Image (cartoon, rainbow, N blue to C red; front, side, top):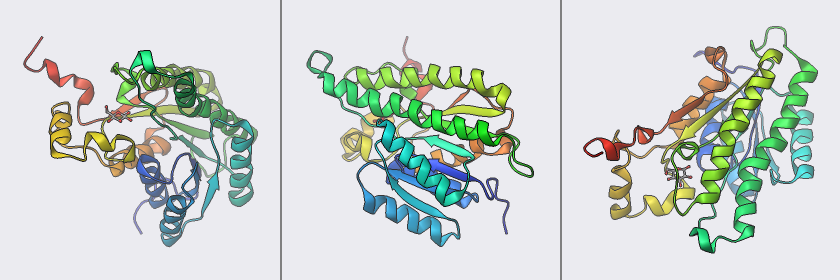
Length: 268
Ligand code: BGC
């Protein structure tokens, strides 16, 4: 049996019916965790992830909840704690884009992105923290009483024209995560972010589904390939495990070097 960094731990992954969230849920399960697979609309996607996790011999449940809604988030945590009897890891992954030229951006587009990407992290993290504080350190368990991972983006540092709502939400995630980490470190709760670059998922299909789009995208990625959800899953396992016990308040960019501003390699 190979080493399982998260053996026996319980996790919630929001937005886990597809894309990065599905990749993270599967990676946590492969590392030994039981996983609540949250979804907003695709029960069939969530069920596929649940089935794969169960096939690994772990527990999994699919739970519908809009992370921007307080009652939904409460129900997500109630269902998880009832099924698993505890919580060690929250991955705040749910996120979306509603792109528009700034002058055309509607308040609904602004609010939708802020609601899911930022308010959702607040609502989910608050309940996770309450549970972590209630239980404290578990004998024989993780060195931390809880771990929170926020799915940010390279756009927490790279400005993004045409996506002002999204970039603003991810900039917000940066200081949300850091402030939470600062407040909760004395309670042995670790809070970190992952900043994915271009990962091949439904959210950015237009950026990779034609050769022309892919060629343009690859100019922004020094490492020369688009990412896959497994790249993010591996980082999430590490950040959730005691292998990163001294890592707190950091964003780990998993981006093939996108944040190295490759346009400057032969310019500037
Ligand atoms: C966005 C993707 C984009 C990537 C790199 C992500 O946060 O969701 O649409 O391809 O950043 O720009």
